Structure formats: structure tokens, C-alpha cells
Length: 104
Length: 104
DNA sequence: TTTATTTATCGTATATTTGCGATTAACTAT
DNA sequence: ATAGTTAATCGCAAATATACGATAAATAAA
Image (cartoon, rainbow over all chains, first blue to last red; front, side, top):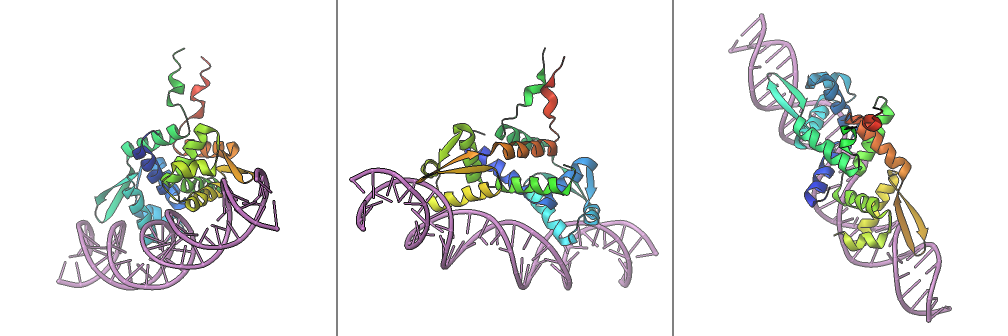
């Protein structure tokens, strides 16, 4: 959380998290590991095109990735960026990741 | 991160964090403990009215609070909601707060 | 080839966000 | 009472976000 780049990256991640539908999508993906667009359309209270749009935003933010499996698309968390978001957020909130180092 | 309310609350917090200027403000407040609007206007690359607007959004989200000290206004982090945001974010990212319980 | 399935994209409408200068409000100090 | 200081608010413009139905693309199945 020192550099301008970190601040901007954190803001981008946070912005992507700034909608209940997108939080729900990420939560579901984290739980299920992966899923198809259709699975999300089934459980979310918005139209299919709207779900697609939110998926695109999460993908643009780098938080998820899609694997085309025609005619379906399988979405997963992008682990690398997910951890990056985690780290930035923890650093921002002063949460010490090494709390559990517990070397006695 | 179970209820609809938690999801919506987290999204509100995240949305408030979704702009570099607001991240910078919160970071500064966290570091300095408190400060006046003018201090922020001095260090941020936007107009005074724009800073005020971002402060209003952070206040509306509950992340900061202002104490009128005419003609100045002193802003601080709202600790209660700050911790709430921390908790929601940690729970969302599956970060165990009790990692440091380390009871041997 | 036609049909069905799934998802992205387009076009559109509406709402929200962002940023600015100008003004107003609320005080202090003179 | 007047002037000065600080910060919020207003009015505006431009950009972005949100949501939807309709359409298109890409493929599998018939």
C-alpha cells in the first residue's frame, strides 16, 4: 500500500467488489471452485445478459477467468489476482498475514 | 458472509473503497489518526469541492466521521464500521482472524 | 442442413459517478 | 458590523454503470 500503483490496483479490485451481484458471483465461485454462466443465471435475480455483463467486469478486473467449453463457458477465480487482492486488502486494513507464524 | 445483508454491506464498503482518491484519504486518516479537510486538499490532486464530495461518500458509507470545529472539520476513521468492514472483507477472502490465537 | 443450447454482444434507457467553479454557510477575528 | 477562513453544497457537464430485451456467435445434436 505504498505506491500509487498499489492504491490504483486496490481501488480497481474494490470497485469490482462494489456490487452485490458481483460479490455473490465471487462467493459462489469460491465455494464451488468453478461454474458455468448458466448456473449463476439460475441463482441470481437478474437477466442472463446482466449476469454476463457482471462476469465481464470481474474478468476485466482480473478476479475471474473463463474457459470456453462450447457452448458453455466455465468460470473460475483467478487465483493469482485473488491473492493479490487479498494481500492489498489485508495490507490496507493492517491485517498481519504472519499472525499465524506462531513460532512459539 | 452468509446473509443478504452482509453481502450488501460488503458491497457498500467495497464501493466506497473503489476510487483511488478515497483509498488515499482512508490511508492518510489511518496513518494520521485524524485530519482536517484542508490537509487532504493540500495533498490530493483534485479540487476542494471534489475532496468534500469524496469525504461525503466515505461518511455516507460509514467509514469516516466528521467533527465540526468551526470553521474547520476534523475527520477520523469510524472505528466501529472500519472493523466491520475489516471483518466482512476477511470473511469474504477466507482470512482467519484467529490465526494469531496461538494458544500453543 | 436444420435445430437446439448456451453465452456474449448490441442497442437502448435510466441512474449514478466524477469533477469543476461558484456560491453559500458557519464561524472568528477585527 | 465587516472581513477572513474553511468546508459544504449547488449547478452543470461528461463519463460510467446498471439493467433489459433482442440479436448474434459458436457449437453440438438431429
